[in-house]
Length: 297
Image (cartoon, rainbow, N blue to C red; front, side):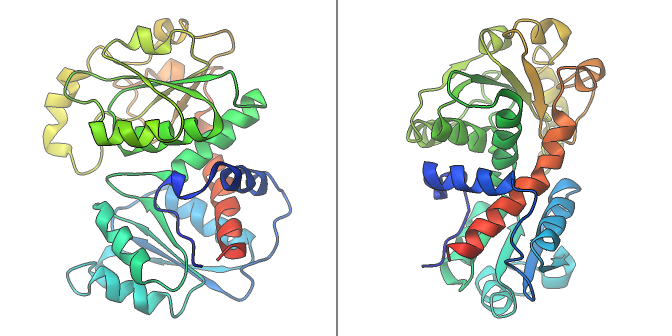
């Protein structure tokens, strides 16, 4: 059976543990030797392109990055037809898209694994890197708490699901009107946790070991920028807020960052920051995932 990763809970908890174990292996199997991996981008990215290309190379494969104007996803050709063509050439197909339904449609017809490199609903590759970073920092997941402060977006959704799968507690603070939908909360709860949801950042970070944030205005929401700046004005991660975490608490951010908005520069570059290691772990976790998918499809 062909396995896909469109959201992090497309893996079972034991499969997720195997992916993270493979991600930490410095001597990966050359399981993609002589094979290609198609990386289709509808949205641009610094970390996703570089981490995925290098992950493929480290597994012995050949990455081919495809820009939006080369295929015209759902304009020049349908998502289904693109998937059928690319799966005839490549061992794995990965796509970074605006609408989640595009990766779902690709997965339905593809004969090889499809990986969601980001959609408006989910960012499972980021969640894998987040878990790897937390495990490297604390050595285990049990007994630790992740606090997310900001917009309940695709990153927060995947993170919440991932936390439930490994036994991390999850607490989230968002302004009114920017919380998860009930459907998203149900998806997170189905992973095994009941997240704390609040409009108060201090309540979310109290007792936390990890404070996580993201930009307030994601790609595709630029017209809402001023409205969001106003709504999130009290949600900046600064030294004072970070000091309310447990001793040894760390900062995480999926990047790119807007210092002075969601996080201050001194915190981003401070001793508690794991942001740069987290970015590097995008490559390691992607390698673990691709390795696992190739072995299990």
